[in-house]
Length: 106
Image 1 (spheres, helix red, strand yellow):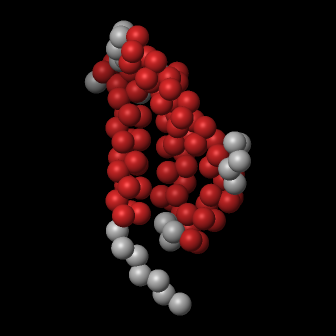
Image 2 (image 1 turned 90 degrees about the horizontal axis):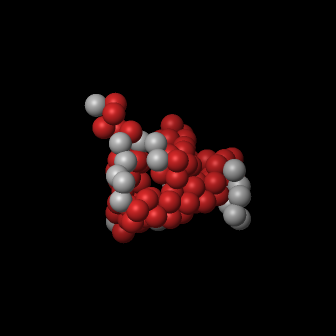
């Protein structure tokens, strides 16, 4: 099972796609984690997630780490099936969380 988690395909198109997606996720994760590329860094992102979006702190930390480390994992080629599934789930979660109606309380 461990070998299956570390296995990657020898197809060059999948390698290019993995590198492009890995760079995209890394840059987006670096905004949240390190404050690079115009981001607010870890403290700013945690404040936004916990105060504005009311996400519990452990889940906010997991989201930041998954995006940052998952991007690095895709670039390096480590646990690529796991990283791909994790980012797919994160994208779907954001899509549906923003598409649901929210009540405004004063």
